[in-house]
Image 1 (cartoon, one colour):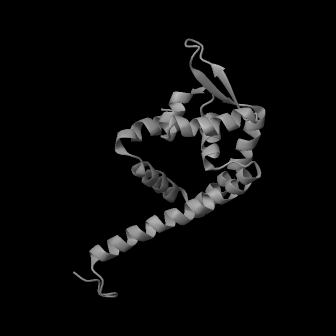
Image 2 (cartoon, helix red, strand yellow; image 1 turned 90 degrees about the vertical axis):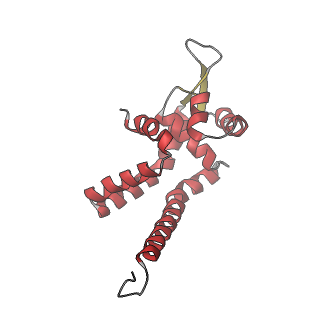
Length: 164
């Protein structure tokens, strides 16, 4: 069945709409990361450093193994990034309370200041978009993003984020 106005089939319109949404996601991510990328460059850091800083800030005292599980990167990749952050005084490692071999991660004051600097523009960008879109759209946005998370992980991720 063709669309009377464009002559396009509903299936084509659906495919095109999906392509457009995927492309919007790429452009939104580009602009969402642009501000932090500039700041990270000043420190000779990259997005991996930003992700580590973010998740350590959100989960003070997180173990290295939990962080590996969240980021889904290799120990080697995390080690390189984490070592740089520890050596430069952004993250502090402490032994676990019950298992002294465990390494628990905390942002230092310097790390907290950098996290705030990195996320401030992103918070403002998201807040502005939410204000412009309205409450119903915000709920839809959250639902769409939740739907993009792997089904097997979704409940765990949402509990981590929402604290339920």
